[in-house]
Image (cartoon, rainbow, N blue to C red; front, side, top):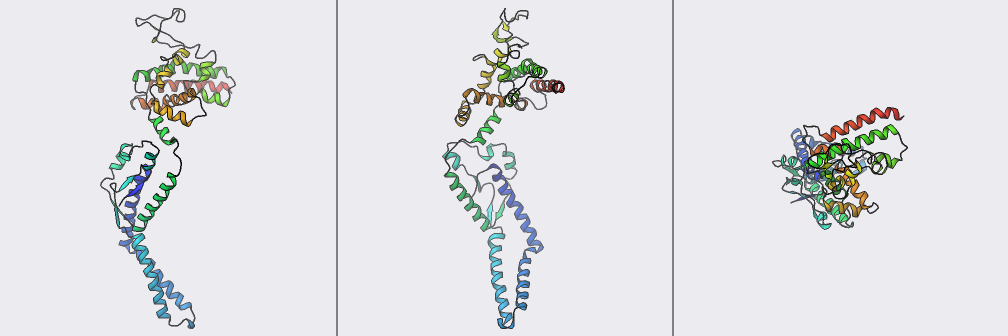
Length: 341
C-alpha cells in the first residue's frame, strides 16, 4: 500500500508523525491507559441504570446490554482507528508528480533536493498506521488531487522563486567585476545621493537600493560622472574620455559607470543576464505580462547581484569584496543619513 504526498515537508513529516504516534500508542498500551474508556463506559451505564425508575424493567440485564453495545463500538474504534496496523516507510510514501507532469513542469524528487540528507536519516525508520487513518489520508489526497486537477495550469510562482534563488554567477571574474562596480560606481553614487538629499518618490527610493538603478543611470551627476578606477579591456583606452589616466599594456580604458553597466553586449548588465537560464526569463515574462521585457530582466538581475546572492557565490569563510563594498556603502549611508534629517 502507498501513501501519496504532494509537498516535500509533508513527505518527511508523514513518516515522522507516524513514528511518533507509534511511540505514544506503545506508552498507552504499556501503561494500561487505553483501557480507561472501557472503565468509563461501565461506570456511566451503571450510574444511568441506577437513576432510572422501576418501570424500566430488569436494570441489570438492560445495563449489561448497553455496556456490551458500547464496548463493541469502542473495540471497533480502537481496532480500526487506534491500533497501528499498516506498515509505512520511505519506500511506501510516494511524492506525487501527477499535477506537475500534467502542467509540463519538471519538479525534482525529494531525494534530489536539499532535503535529501534529512530523508536519508529516515531510511531505517518505519511505522504502522491504523487502517482508518490510512484510508482517510488516501481519500483526502484523492479528493484534493481531483480538485487541483480541475484548476487550469498556470505559472508556478514558487518554482520560479526557487529557480531565481538558485541562480548564481558562475564566472568568478564576473562576480569580482560586480564587486568592483559596487565599489567604484554604486557606493560613491549612493553616498552622493544622501549628501544631496533630493526628493524621491517611493518607487525611486526602492530603485536606488541596487547597483543597476535607473535613477543613477539616467540622472546627471551619478553614473555618467563616476568611472571605473581600474582599466577594463572591453573598453579600449580613449584619449578624450580617459585623459590624464594611465595607459596600460592591455589597452584597456576607463569607461563611465553608465557605459560599464549598459553598453551593448559588453556591458555588465548584458553579461549578467547571460548567466540566467533563458527558459526562466521566458517563464517570468509570460507571467509578468504587465511588465516590459526590460523591467523583467532588471528584476531578475537585481535578485542575482543582491549581496546575499554574492555571498553565496564565494567561500563562506572569506568575506567577499562585494560584501565589504556593500558594508562601506551602508556605513557611508548611515553617516550621511544623520544630516539628511
